[in-house]
Image (cartoon, rainbow, N blue to C red; front, side):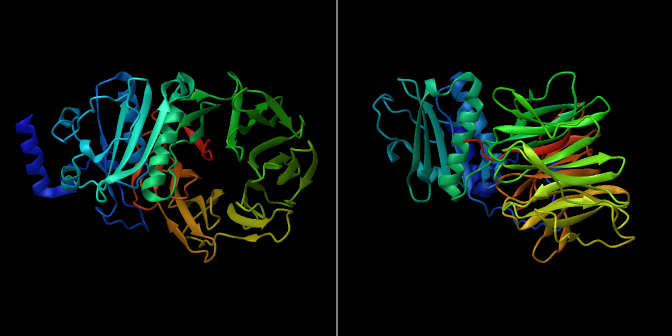
Length: 447
């Protein structure tokens, strides 16, 4: 172990944080996209410390470290587990004492030499309490301590409980919460699934055998809506995530209803309805279960893919009224319809799949460039547009609740998968590894 400790110190002397920080994304995926600039080394260093080799602890540490890495807020410092002693980790004589972990057991100088600004230590006490301590390395003190009885980590909710711990760590170190305790909906082979934000725990949502489309989350993350095809039409269902109970919205067998979108207060559901008269956007009062309202009148054009602004006052949507599909906006009652995202004839093609950012300041969508869809983000105030992707076909962006991450579909590895890009660093990572994945929708934080 002394020899390994010496090797660690040589590495520190040779390069500090950057010599030991490892990005879990393969080099091919660490891509800087158009319009994004990032200077490595400016994020705080984060070290996740080990303890006794216990199966549950190993799972907690692995999920926690991955969540912190995927938050893209830290330079992660990863070391082999056997280096714990070399890092000055020592277990107290009595882990059942109920006291906090003090600097007695923390080698702040070594952690700082490794480039860490923060360190997180996870252990399980003798009375089966999971203890997570966040250390401020530069300030040489405990920033926050979390104690969770093991009985509060039941198997069905174990991963979500750990994700919440990860988000709490992000909050106490950066001032803003993470997005680990979120889930994404996706479509695979006509069925809706949900998956954790780290790509694990894929669970079917819609009934087996049903052909579904355009899934979306409710504003509290407790319900979803999607279209189910059958009987010559398409019907929109709202489904409770926990119980699986469903209800039909605006029942009709004569039309095709699809691309639903909840209003921020959860009262209204906007969706597209196609019939022999064309495609238009309607809203339905799901609280009162009534009051279908038509917001657009096609007249030789189609209007679809509505998305509410975070304040609920505006709806962005796609319209073919200029010829090719483009992004328009209107008030929530259908008035004031106008072109929102500027485009250049001959330079770019159709634009589709708009979605407002959580703060309402930006709009993401995909637009054809040289015959291939690419993800764009528009500043709503200035209406300036920047392109985020370029490799392969990239489409259907969905905002994370932190407003800095976007999920999207890309075929850059050969078939369609869900990928995530961090707009602050430009880092891109692959979320799914399925036969085919489409139409991501990102949940709010799940409390």
